[in-house]
Image (cartoon, rainbow, N blue to C red; front, side, top):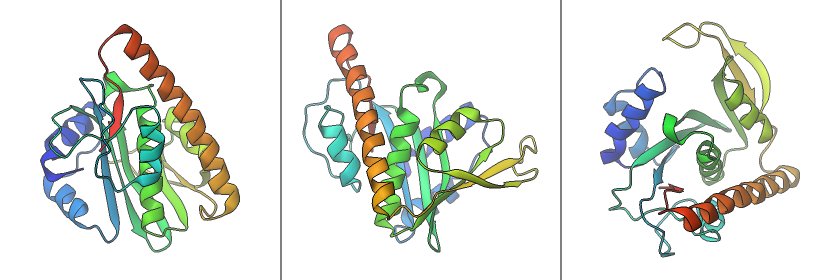
Length: 213
């Protein structure tokens, strides 16, 4: 995520009925490279040319390059369709936010962003992952359970818009061989899902597949 992306990110916030962050908050988070990572997903309007971009997420990039989905160049004007952030809280990589524009949901974009944030957690030397999620957001909870998160508690009236409770979720250590093997298999499955979507786009119409920037 770059500072010029903030207005588009805030628009997705509004579409997602989330309590919006201020532009100042986003700028502060983006600039704090010591303990934060923020990413955006873009919908390409042309088929990718395979040119490797500059990126801070080499593990995810390798997955995407294998299927022709690569992060756009820094000057890309492809529309932002999702975003996410993570910051280091002692030993935990705490996922602060993930959102996908309504028109691009159920295509693996959120899972793609989650994987970028997991790479960010490794860069920050986090030992665990943690987050809060609305108790009513069962779709997101299923995704997090898939990636090893488990409920450990609940925060009452956590969300300011409707006073909904938040489910608190943590992973076991992400540095273990077992977690990394699980992550590898999940990325193989995500790779296959995205590859099939790319194949369908290539056959039927110009590309609008997601990329992480």
